[in-house]
Length: 334
Image (cartoon, helix red, strand yellow):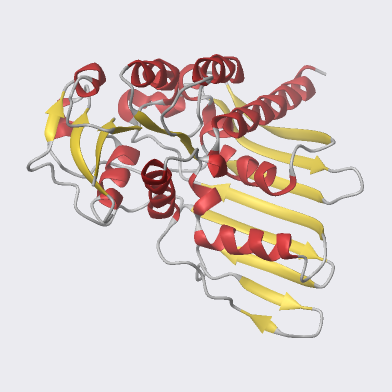
């Protein structure tokens, strides 16, 4: 069993805790958080319900991540801290010689990401970015269908991700652009990362959005075009009241079929073919969190790099979001 320590016990840290409790490959041996209330094993706010055991009985508790990194009973570290602390704790975790799974976005800026990439050269432990949508079963199946070519090439695609305003975040950090990068970097990046994973870097991108002083770009609508390839529209944001229900969805038009998914309808992948068939293919069990954990842990056990969610690819996604934000603000200045 791989012994995992989680640094950060806010919403996403508790999501990882509950999910890891169901793994046959790992045991959570330690957690750390600066907020005493987060070390009480109780639920906190978030945009997705956490189901599972988040109690901390028998788990070492630390009031800072540095103390957890000194714990010899921790083999791998899961960094679930606010984004502006990622680079600091990636480097500290490397100095402690731990395997590392770091939440998305990998770093607050692509410049910080390049510092991490430089530091990782020659690092002999598993390092992985927790871009969970790459592992979410419905997105995995859609990508497999597209890569198989059974229905031809992608002609167009639309992806969306919307949430209520995250007023629940610790000290309001998600609504502080300096610390989180705003909705564009924290929420929208899920779909940008998936598009980059599926189709690669676009030939051209354009974007517009709602830029809130201090909070950042809280709603963004981007258009990616590929030379000789599809046009991809991606929108995301939390420019909504807190009671607004979370939603992720996509629609993709291929030469011989259309693919559709909506988390607020049924969560299935619907395939509508040109010969008038409607298919709902079987999906892998679990969700993006459990499947990214399994992949990360298997990489450790097998002694191989985490190529499906590399640091380099995660930095590319941060850079794409930065380009979108620059495009939004260029429009505002014109």
